[in-house]
Image 1 (cartoon, rainbow, N blue to C red):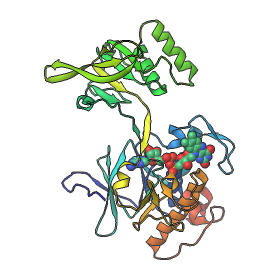
Image 2: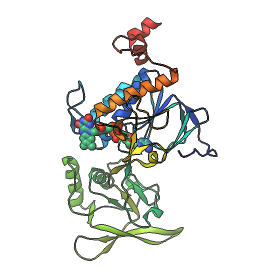
Image 3: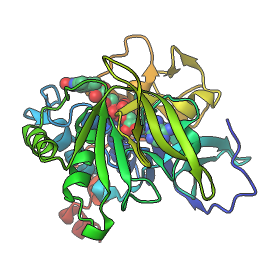
Image 4: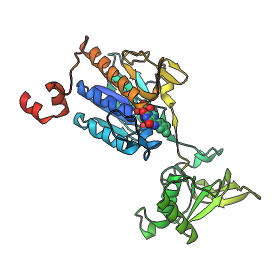
Length: 371
Ligand SMILES: Cc1cc2nc3c(=O)[nH]c(=O)nc-3n(C[C@H](O)[C@H](O)[C@H](O)COP(=O)(O)OP(=O)(O)OC[C@H]3O[C@@H](n4cnc5c(N)ncnc54)[C@H](O)[C@@H]3O)c2cc1C
């Protein structure tokens, strides 16, 4: 496990548990912890909750969630988020957990990229699924040296785009949307703040989107000349001398047919989609099998006591990567954590009848009765 840098001025925030991953199983983990009185902080590298449900099938229907009519990934994630509200979890979205350290008193410190706080807790629940969804890189030697001023991933460059020649790389919805927003000014920027030109660079003149309205807007802007399209494969960055040193001035492009050419630009936005990477979790010294964490099936604990793992990130005999299976795992992991705190068994209570659980859920009658 990588140590937290003691010289850093990060604030330490104490909580009972940290859940890594706000996918469906991570959210259900928060709910189960809440029922057992454990307060949670939740960290996810994505800007919104839902994990694969949002990233991979937001508009497709799930048919096999017990008791739910067919529900699309987006609505299911929203319902789970609503369900955890009574427990007031603290979400750290857009942050990747990078380091995990065990303190002398047995607690864990987790630090993240994107959040200056160090989260200190007694229990860790890794619900990292297939890994952190991170932007796919454009693999061109030397390109990263121009980031983030001139090159960014899925967001506008830090130096802005006003009066600049902007090139967006990609052929999926995110790239098309970024191109349409910038070319049409529908992102709300003023006329003075508009780019000089907007070009979408894609390897072929075909775009993979099911969004008819987006495609129609894209075609309209393209036909009216407000949006250019360049077809080809980028092969190397082209630089020129700037006042403070070399700057990105273009990309060498290999078209499907014909000779290479230079596409001039001064701002490059790479929108090639997101791909999951387990990343730092694989370096924490936890026992793994084929890139998944091994757990015992009674407590869903990893090889390190106090660190539980649930959902798609785990493997055990008979494991199925289904949401309902992950939900079962989260229940047992929450009980195991509560038992460790208590030093003995935690009695099973039902939400239908337990005033304690209903009180934690904020059910009005039970609060009245308890007071
Ligand atoms: C196309 C498709 C359709 C599916 N349909 C069904 C279905 O019909 N029924 C069903 O039961 N299952 C279905 N599944 C499977 C289901 O989506 C998964 O089992 C479920 O999403 C697993 O949930 P999870 O919370 O474990 O992981 P995920 O949903 O993968 O969420 C993990 C989260 O952890 C975050 N994360 C990872 N590492 C870090 C880190 N270091 N720091 C911060 N954040 C991190 C990720 O960004 C992600 O948001 C489907 C899967 C796919 C791909």
